[in-house]
Amino acid sequence: MPERFFIDGPASTSAGIVLEGSVAGHIARSLRMRPGDDIIVVDPGGREAGVVLTSVTAARVEGDVVWSRDATGEPRLRITVIQALPRERMEDCVDLLVEAGAAEVRPVITERVVSRPPPSRVAHRVHRWQAVATEAAQLAGRGVIPRVHAPAELPDALAALEPGSRVLACTFEGVSPLAAVDADPERPLALCIGPEGGLGSRDIDTLRRAGAEFVHMGPRVLRTRYAGAVACALLLARSGDLADPLVAAPAG
Image (cartoon, rainbow, N blue to C red):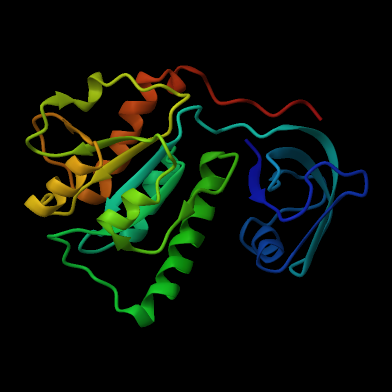
């Protein structure tokens, strides 16, 4: 598949596509693309387009649109992952969640979370996580860039969910297996993943008050930064999202 990039303007335009700044530098220097090479661009309106490059420099890349369509790569089931901040490598967590198909990521501070970023560093970290999400979305062929929110307390994250969301909390003591859950693609779903030490009693009470269902992920223990991506994959497989192959680019 051609390389994919998210753009700020419309993807389908007779005037062609212009990419500047770091994206142009990446295309010219890192990917070493040349005129005649193909890329795919995705716009904020949910359209993607095939582009044949006509001019490539580190400062500016230009190309002609040869096809366009509704953006592909998005699951019908919208999963928000409420992820307790891991002890380290939150970037890996965001990367895996976006590639697996999460619609958005809400980092939370739960009872047993060890890593608590100081207020002065929150904006920098969120900016970094969002950059990782963008790179992962491009690599995975997503149709949108999932949003990564600033860390919040668990009750605040639950209160911010879309109205009517179904909440599933993965715990070691969960009664039902997550792999057996049937999810309705028409209803948004939130998946809560605890930290290394698991969810505490106050967290469990908070989730109960929010109407959460408690599920487990089987007889093995996963690192928290991987568990959310595995859980997303299980739910998307159950919903039928993983039954279809990658959508190929039309012939130019």
